[in-house]
Image (cartoon, rainbow over all chains, first blue to last red; front, side, top):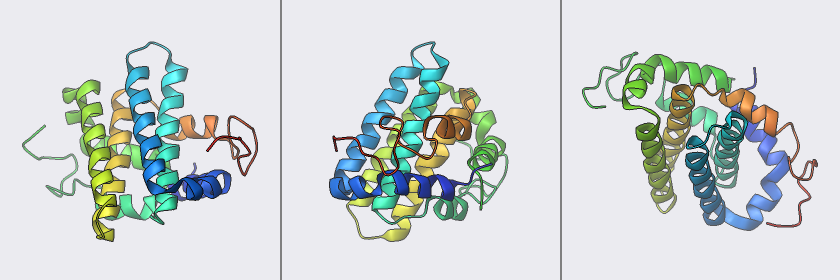
Length: 97
Length: 97
C-alpha cells in the first residue's frame, strides 16, 4: 500500500524541478489536458490505456500540488473524513445526484 | 499516512451507490467541473479553499475510478515506478518542459 504523500513525494523527486520552472498555470494546463485524455480513453476498450490515463491525472494533480505547496493527503482527509462533507453521512444521504 | 487505495475505498463507501446511478459520463463531467473550480481557486488567496478544491479533484477522480473499476494506486505505481516513464530517470531528464 502506497500513501498519497509517498506518491506526491515521488512526483516531486521526478518532476518538481521542471514543474517549478513551468509554473502553476502551465502545470494546471497539463492537468486539464490529461483529464481530456482520460475522457477520450473512456470511449475506447483498451483497459491499459485507461489505467495509464488515470495514473497521469493523479500524477499531474500531485505535480500541481507540489508547485503550489499543497498537501493532497492532508487536504483530502480534512475534507472527506470517512463521510460526505455535506450531509456528514456514509453512505452519502444528500438528496441530489 | 493514508494509502491511495484507502481513499478510493473510502469514496466507494460514501459515494459508489450514487456514483453508479449517475454513471461514468456524468461522473467524468463532475470531475471536469471540479478541475475548473481548482483553477479558479488558484487565482485567489484563500489557502483553505484551494486545499478543498485539491481534495475534491482527488475525490472525483477516485469516484470515477470506482465506477470504471479501475485501481488508482496500481495504475499510478505501474506507470510511475519511481522514475519518469519516458526517460526512465529520476529526476526526469526529458528534453521538453
